[in-house]
Structure formats: C-alpha cells, structure tokens
Length: 78
Image 1 (tube, rainbow, N blue to C red):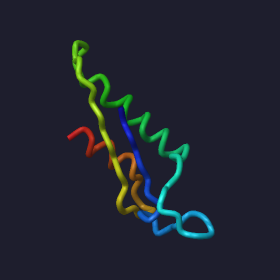
Image 2: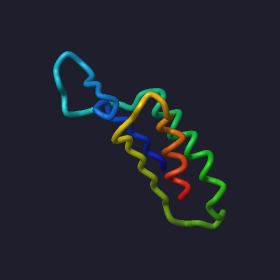
Image 3: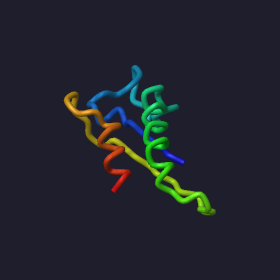
Image 4: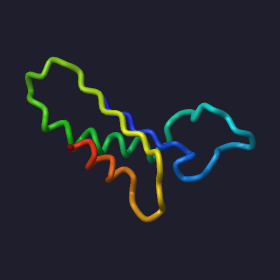
C-alpha cells in the first residue's frame, strides 16, 4: 500500500474559507503520485512475499520548482 499525502500547508495554502484541521480526501494528483510510486517499487519485491508492505510519503515542504512526487519516489526507493 502506498499513501502519498500532500499537505496544503506544505505549499503555503490553506484550503477553504476557514481553517479545518482535517485535510479531506486526497487530490487526483496525489492518487496518481501514489500509483506511480506503487508501480515502480512493486517489481522489487519477491513473488513469495507474504507480508504487507506499507509506504507513506508525506510532503512537508514544497517549492514550485521540484516535483514532490519524483522526490517521494526517490525517497521510497532508498
């Protein structure tokens, strides 16, 4: 399972007219980034692996120059 979470405070944005502590459902971009990471790391595991593997990527800071999903992919592959 891959969870990719983009926090709005990472980009300096707070969604909605008033501040809500819960982030809500993931955006389409976050779902696509999680699937991208899942598709890349899945062949690295052996076929007979019986345990569940969970990867959680949380973007804590983000600038407009670098894609956080690619950086998350590199961090996951370590």
